[in-house]
Image 1 (cartoon, rainbow, N blue to C red):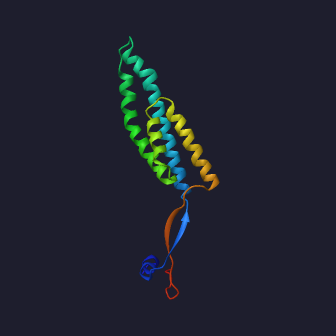
Image 2: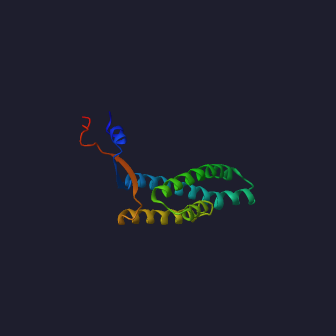
Image 3: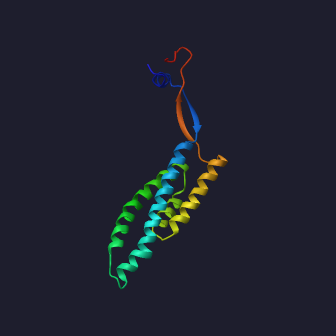
Amino acid sequence: MSRSVDSARSGRATTVGSVDEKGIRGALTRYRVMAWIVGILLVVLVLIGLPLKYGPWNDGRVVTWTGIPHGWLYMILLITAFDLGRRVKWPIWRLLVIAAAGTVPFLSFVAERYAHKDVVTRLANGSLPVHRQTEAVSGPDEQPES
């Protein structure tokens, strides 16, 4: 039998606290990439696409080329922000601010910078919440598998 099954039957398990630093750094990278992509698309949409469409040129191609990808990628930004927020235990208000920042030109860059600074500082200080994991422990009369 496996050690985890043996320890589950004996009722013995230890709880080990750990911070998934690799997972947090990966989530932070995914979030940063999406924040920059969504932010750039929104800036292009608002500063170039909308004037081209509603100005004297009456050309809506840039709005189509940037607006649709911005909308779809914004949904991915929300998913990456939620993933990062879940890992570092952000309050819901911070996730709402990040969600709103993706709809205002240039604000996603500001939100990304604050999020990056917060996560890196918390990783360096060790002030991230500890995730609890259950680790199996074999009993005195149980032999671990080799």
